[in-house]
Image (tube, rainbow, N blue to C red; front, side, top):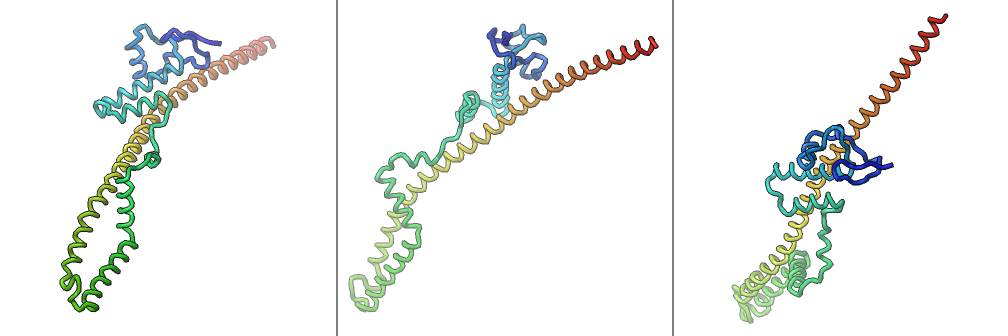
Length: 235
């Protein structure tokens, strides 16, 4: 069993048939804007109705937030294609890192560890003890340890930008995660809106079915009462 849609003039299975009276007014207005002849006596397929629902959500979103940006367009397209919108941020780790990135990560990991702190404190203590107590401030770096201060300054000057390089790359990954979270949340909101539309359609369809069933039952009851009245009159 099949029917011809009054929108696309294509043939669809009968179970996808949706009467125009079951379509919500905003969606119906959108359909009539393209098909002026579409009235309450017409029908369309459920897949066509879902396409118009997605268009309505997209246009409503554009009116609410203004011109859709690239992320929101990706979300709307993903909804139409039934695809996921979020990428796994960990996929970036699969790509080969450059030598500078690897060095920056190693320096950042080591510079932010207790191993570095303990090792550096031990180095400072040994340096000071050798010059102060072994060489009695007559060695290669007597008090106030000018050479040690120079070394510390050089380490700080080189370590800081290397750590910042690693942090910048981590911040880029965090921004990507934030974009993915935004797109997932946006798609969830749109899917919920679309789900409400579908539930409203099902409720309306069920209400009409129940009303028809009740009408049939009332007709049956009226027939039974009529027969009982006839039998009563005969007796």
